[in-house]
Structures are given as C-alpha cells and as structure tokens.
Image 1: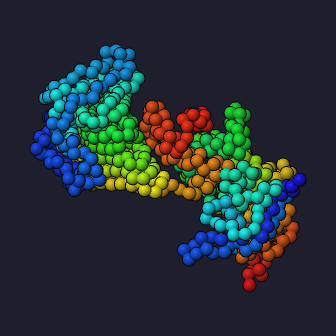
Image 2 (image 1 turned 45 degrees about the horizontal axis):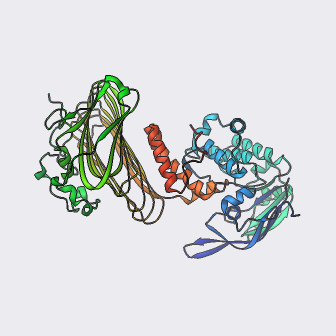
Image 3 (image 1 turned 180 degrees about the vertical axis):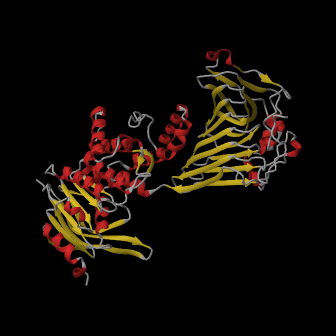
Length: 251
Length: 387
C-alpha cells in the first residue's frame, strides 16, 4: 500500500534561457500529507513559483532529476492534464485569459475531464452558483470569458472557485494573496480554509508575505532560498520571518 | 438627385469600376489589387469566351414565403441590375455582362431566412452568375447564399438596401476542394437602413471575395463580418472596400480566421475611404488571425484613406498570432487534455464574431469545420448545452 502524500524528493529543475539552461531548483525535499497546510516562504527569485509550475508540468521547465509522488503516482513523467487527473491543482499567480470560453463552459469541461464523466447538470449548476456566491461573484460571472477583463481579485477568486469545484487531493497556491485587497484576501482565504477543512486534502501555500497567514494557518513553514528549503518549522517561523526578513538566509 | 453613389472613386487603393472589359487588363499578379492572389491558377477566368453558362440558384423554403419574394431574371440594362455593382476587375466584369441575372426582390418583412443554394457539379468548366438582391424600403430579411459542390465560378452579388430596410446577407463558401470561386459583392446602403454582410469561407482551393459597400444617403449602417478557416493548400482571400461617400454613415468590419497546415493561406485587405462629404461618419475595421501550425501564411492589410477629419471616429486593427501555449497549459492544468484544450481555444477565438453574427447555420458549420480540422468527430455532446 502506497503512502498517501505529495512527496517531493531531491527535485532539480532547469529553465531554458537565451544563454542555455539555467538551474533554478537545486534539490527540493518536501512532503505534504493529507490534512496538512504547508507554507513556503522566500524572497523574490528564490524559485518558489518554479517549484509550483514544474510540479504542474509547465513546458518551460525541465526536471533534470528528482521525483514528485502523488499518493504513489510519479507525476514528473505525466502530461499536464494527467497530473491534474491524478489529483493535483495549481492556483496560478497569473491566471491566463482564454477569450471566448465562458467560465461555466470551462468549469464544466474541467470537471468532466477530472471525473471522467459529465456532472449531473442540475446539481452542477447549483453547485457552481453556490461556489461563485461564496466567493462573492455574481451569477453573471459564469458567462464571462475565463479571466478576460477580470480584475486581479476576480482572477484569484476564480482560481479558488475552481479549487472548490474540482476538489483536488493536493492544491498548490502560488502567491494567491498577491494583488488582493483586504476584503478579497479574506474571501479567498475562507475559500482555501473550506477546502482544507475537509481534513483529507493537502495544501502548499506559496507566498512571500506573512499577511495571508493571518487567515490561513499553516501547520508547517518552509523557508525557500536559492532553489531549496533552508529552514523548516511551525507557524512561529513565519512570525520570526516577519521580524527579521530573509536577510539572514542570503549570504 | 440621383440615388447612385458618385461614379468616380477617388480611392488610391481601390480600382475604378467599369463594365467595359477593355478597362480591365488581364492581371499579371504584380498589380496591387492582385498581388496576393495566385493568378497563374486563374488564367481561364480572364477570358469571357470560357464562360459556359451559369450555376442554377435553388431557392429553399421560398414557397413558404408567400408573395413577399420572387426570383425572376433581369436582362442586361434592366434596373436595378447595374445600378449598384460596378465591376472592379475583369472577372467581375465578365459575370456582370452575362445574359440573365437572377433577381431576389424583398418587399416586406420576412421572418425566416431565405436560402439560396448555388451548387456546382463540374470544376472543369467556368460558370458565371450575377445575382441582384433588392430590399425595398422598410423591408426586413435574412438571405443565406450557400455555395457548394465543385465549380470554377464567378459569382457577383449586387445588393440594394432601400430606405429604412434591414437586410442581412450571409454568403457561405463551402465548396469541395478543387473548386475556385471569385466574386464581387457590392451593396448600396440607403437612408437609415441597416445592412449586414456575413462571409463564411471554409471550402474550395481558391476563394476570393471582393466585398464593397457605399452609401446612397446619410445614416446608413453597414456591418461586415467574416469567419474563415484555411487548411493545407487553400487560398482564402477577402477584400473589403467601404466607400463613405455620404455623411453620418456607420461601418464596422470584423473578420476572424484560423489557419492550419502546409501552405494554408488567408488574405484580408480592408480599405475604408472617407470622402470629404462623409462628415460625422464612424468606422472601425478589424481582422484577427490564429495560426495553428507552421507553414501557414496570413496576410492582413488594413487601409484607411481619410479625406475629412470631421468624423466621429475611424480606426482599424489587424493581427496574426500563433497558438498561445500559456492558454493550453492553463486548460490542461485543469485536467483538460491537449486536443480538447485546443478545440476550446479555437472555438473561443471565433466566439466574438459568431456572437455578432447570430445566425445558427453559420455557427454549426464553423464549429463542425473546427472539429473536423482538429480531428474530432462531429458528435461530442460537451458543448451542446451552452446556450
């Protein structure tokens, strides 16, 4: 029987640049168990987003060695959509506009793809509307093109609507707090907490501010510098980071 | 005062119209007007002696229309034939001088679309049609021209939109491969009338539509929309000319096309002329192309000739973009496989224009074409309920 966990082992990742491949992740080790909330904190350019995108399979990044196991399934050899079907979700820092594809069509197509069958229409529409309402988005939102003309806050809330409706086993949230005003931050955090409160889901929250951690309480905090984890602790580590900043890790 | 537009066009970009064949030389391909077109594949089109009759125009559902419409013929010189369309090239002049023109008269409000099918069964001979559509003042109708089968064809469409009339003309080029279709569409938009022209070009080896609009009075509104999908080896060309020759007219042009496969070619040339008389007009033209594979070529040339600054607005945009990998990644990261993600993006690309078109036939045809080109069967069920 395989362990239920998202297990990242000695992950090395390159990004393609004009001057050739550049090493970004230099041996990441991290394990997230169901029911746990992990926060990764680190300065700009430390490779936090690269970690998120390379786990999700973005073509820009090349995994040169290491492994990512999701409940025993090796993700690194899977296609992007197969990783999602295996139970992974990435809430993006910059959600992409898809002109002409409505939010409702997008949500239903994604749900159908993940579940392998179309959701029952009536209960689905109700669920979508409830989820939108919880994120303080009106019904009309569902007929708009995905992320097109959305405010920064609407984009992030739309990501959390997807998180709730697709209900993956593990969610990586990449700087979901960036660009949010205080009200939107609260709404988004409540959404993440609802998801996490199911008790059997894993959350990896990537941020460089402690602000969101006032709303979402992590069980573990990892400090990420220069492509790997340099310190780990509980929520109190975030508090001390607030005091001292990242300076002591940058030598 | 004459109802006709000024006869001499002072555009620097658009040729003078003339019924006289001698005024239109045989194109060499070096002319501005022909420079994107593979004229070497059209040599038979430039000799009037090659024309062997016309294609039959079959009216579908016309009987149900009652007395509102009829489809007789007009001989040479029989008005309104020849009052709107001035041939701007040799092929158009050849079609304009054929013996009998078909005449669709709309003199009332017609609820259901009037469907005219123009079906060819031989692409070894050249045929030429001249169709005249006249919408009487205050009439309302949608006319769908459906071109299909195999042909080498010149098809002129001359359109008179009477005062206060609302006329939508949809021209669907859904030829089998191996077909060639050239045509000049030309409309005269009268006072306070609303003219919508919609082009859907999907089939044929070479299709070239010259689409012209001018105004007979002030207050006319023209909306020219188009969608096309060029596959390997196809040349699909749309040229537009809007002649703002009266005050307070409106023209909006919006064409979108996708290209896929080796030597898939699309050409879009949009010319808008704003004459000194055209005070207070408003115009915008846009063309957008989505290139799905290597080896395609999309030409997009917007031109504005502005001879008065006293207008509400004039603008244009043209762009050609490749498939956006970030969109694919985003959709795939939600579990949607690559093929389905591509389909969503391509369908989405056309949605803006399709929503403006609002004619169900057009949407169905285009979506089927997209599915075929992207390797899907026609029946998927997924997108049916999105209404």
